[in-house]
Amino acid sequence: MASDGDSDFDFDSGDPKQTGDPFEQSFDDTGVGLYVCEPHRSLGMKGGIVVVE
Image (cartoon, rainbow, N blue to C red; front, top):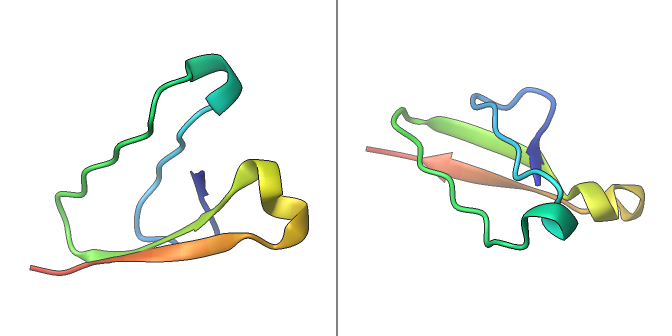
């Protein structure tokens, strides 16, 4: 999973095959985090996270 396009946050889970660990991300500010699933990018897998106060 990695931030994409007009995301308000920059993040990247790295290569899950190399890390082997679950990915956790904390956000300190409000906004919208847009992301793509790197292994499934060609299938159009993407999503968003809305952070509110």
